[in-house]
Amino acid sequence: AQSVTQPDIHITVSEGASLELRCNYSYGATPYLFWYVQSPGQGLQLLLKYFSGDTLVQGIKGFEAEFKRSQSSFNLRKPSVHWSDAAEYFCAVGGGYNKLIFGAGTRLAVHP
Amino acid sequence: IAGITQAPTSQILAAGRRMTLRCTQDMRHNAMYWYRQDLGLGLRLIHYSNTAGTTGKGEVPDGYSVSRANTDDFPLTLASAVPSQTSVYFCASSDIPSGEQFFGPGTRLTVL
Image (tube, rainbow over all chains, first blue to last red):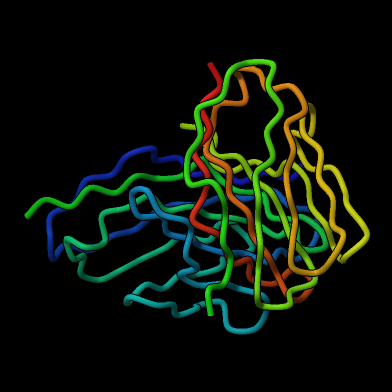
């Protein structure tokens, strides 16, 4: 069955520290992969997406993610976290003609 | 350009009542979706529509119905609301197969 796992429910980092949010997926074909961010009380905003080609993709707000087929992973990274990055992050995989399957989310807290 | 609008922003509803959540997009996207977001479960697809005049069931369709009379509107109806339908509901749209989905701001629904 198609699924997305985000192993970390909550992560806390200090401002300026590096960040990596984990995402593992189960999908039968070549996946389309996405990372979305949700600020409190808001809708979801796309950070970045992978369809094909270069496995390291750059997104908005200084985020990047690397697709590793052998590990079925699509981890999100940022070299230096800002306080405004505190939010919930969702990994998603394309589940067939536009349908996305979302992970449960990782809530990021940033300490000053 | 408004993108996707949802109404109402929030609603408290008595169990057994009928409720329609409205969703309108101005991007002329072919595909539209309804998700519900529950703590610890991420977003789950309720219903989708690949193009005007067609609809399909998602992961959690029971108790919900949708219609797609035109490209822009995709209302979600709860025929007889139950407390387990208390959730935050997001409408989304997409313009190409397996493409990026754009999300509305959400409707917070409480069924008592």
